[in-house]
Length: 364
Image (cartoon, rainbow, N blue to C red; front, top):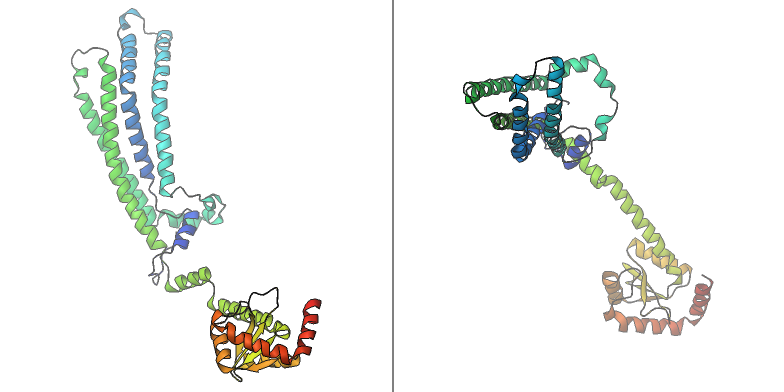
């Protein structure tokens, strides 16, 4: 992991955390898998203990209860060991399976059950001796060494305490039933597992907290990186502005292309110009096909003059159409009467234009 830079003061974003997780860079402590395996083994043994203890006790009674009848030679020992191996294997398999599954789930849980395919990729840096030397003698390497040393000391101390406790059991210095052997093994095995699980839980928790803080520190971002990531996610403002400008130009081009087939252009006369189209039997109401102010208004009127589109000066109607009307949609209902009067006027005074317009629309 790269060491954090001095100016990395911002918390990692969700995108950075996701990318880091895909590379296998997330907080994890191997001891969590060990704890999960120990806990699973404890409960598996607890469930299997009654029948298991009985089987072990009967096996011990069978082997140890009649030693005086058999000579101690290789053939006899082999004959005694074979059935015990089968019994112990049958008893230990469920425990090993439970421990393995628990350890796998604990490891997957630390990554949030996310796939990390980049971890499996070939990386030449792993073959670099200098990189390996730095990993071994880095702060992270020192922490791993201390954790491993703590685990070694802990296991040794627990085993020592368990041995002392076991040796104090009456089974070693007083006559007990042979069937007691199974119960003795079960009780002391569970006790040792429980002690190991509790102690390893403490180590795992401390190690995970350290790894989590270290990972968060390694993934800290500079303000510039956060800004660039936001730009990438939301889009560069300059590119977005250029796209909006292009969209406006395209919309204006399409709007101006409708002016030559308009029925009338209502003007302010200098500031606003609004082009309307109405086809009987097709449109429920006159449709606003183009509108503009200032330079765009002049452009609409210029195109209208080039194609002979009738123009009517009506300041209130032009302002209302520009303010409330939307290009490509019918005019507001409150302007129906005013527009009907304007259209009636141009239909009477520009009959030749509408004859040409009808032919032009049919050819289009």
